[in-house]
Image (tube, rainbow, N blue to C red; front, side, top):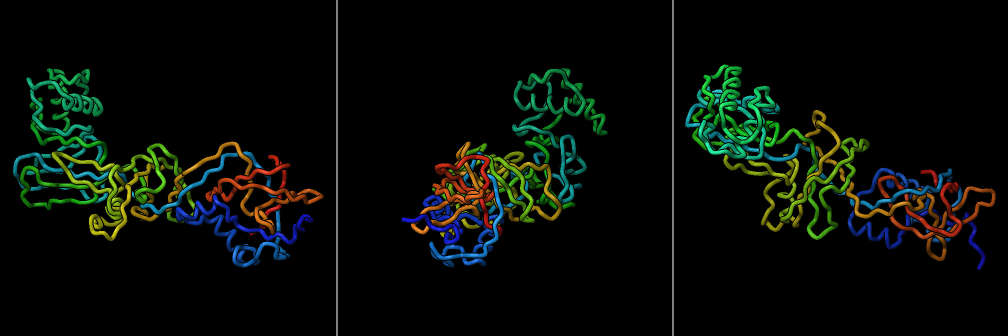
Amino acid sequence: MPTPSPDTLPRVEPSSAAARRKRAIVLVVTGTALAATAGFAARGAWPGTAHPGTVTQGVPVSTATVVRTDVSESQVVAGTLGYQGSLTVVSELGAGIVTWLPSIGSVLRRGQVLFQLAGQPVFLLYGPVPAWRDFVPGMTPGPDVRELQRNLAALGFGPGPADGEFGWSTVAAIGRWQRAHGLTVTGTIPLGEVTFLPGPLRVTATAAQLGTPAAPGAAMLSGTTDTPGVSVSLAAGGPAVRPGDPVLVTMPDGATTVTGTVASVGTVATGAANAASGGGTSNAAASSSASGASGAPGASGQGSGSSPAAIPVTISIGTTRIPAGLDQAPVQVSIMQRRDRNVLAVPVTALLALPGGGYAVRLSDPARRLIPVTTGLFDDAIGVVEVTGRGLAAGQAVEVAQG
């Protein structure tokens, strides 16, 4: 059987088993693939607009180089940009009137005042263990004392070694800290005058109101950490992800991308709306939800039967802040599912559909040789495909359709 003329071979997006697998996980088409689709459809060279063997002339071409690289196959899902975690601050002071609250959107850091009750300020300190007792001489050693000592040192009131022992050096350090803030110097801290949180608090709401009474245990503030992140809900039973997996996040402008890493993966499937919300509720001093970035849409789908079961995933991204106006904005997240390393790859637009099935690429040499190829993974993020073929090597120039 004579070799088909190159001019009778339409350029097509492959419909191989690999491509069918990609459609099965409902990929979102990237800008590169979309542009290629539009270009081929306009020239009658996309599946459904031309049949294998149909003559398609006048397609402008350029050249690209066959490269040896890593090719990844990714799942693209919708996500929500926000700040990680969900924190609630409650009062452990005695009953009193609320006399000061921070403004919404402010970021409170170590040593700053969270709120005031009857003129008594409550200070933010960092640590995973909530305050649960008075800090006084004679108390038994513990991790809460060690947390206090580390915070005093970080604030410049060094109490000596953070050994968890409430000794006279800790009493003296507390006294110096109290004097610096204009407080009565006692060398002790009653329960409720400091609150331990994992880190800075970005205030998103105030549960209390100025001038109203607050009893012990009353919620005062809610907020998030100041660490940007993305919340995603993955269908239960779908492709698995693990903490540490790399991702690529396309920002709301559709062009800017930032790298990210899977920070946490939920262990319980919930309604999709709940999985995306990442919300948490407080216990003694604060609670932190690692299940998502803050404020993602909805929190009412669980148990209604209207939302498919989903796994909440939190993604840390390579930026230190979210630009103004983009908090809670939708983003696209490309999660790598497979990777083939050190393989030959060409642009997807270099593929030609052979009349009898399969694909080929055409070398950009005087003979314009046609080389049949077998396709592997498709990398939608950069618009390339893994290929193998007899006579194909890295560094060769191949013809590609201009989109």
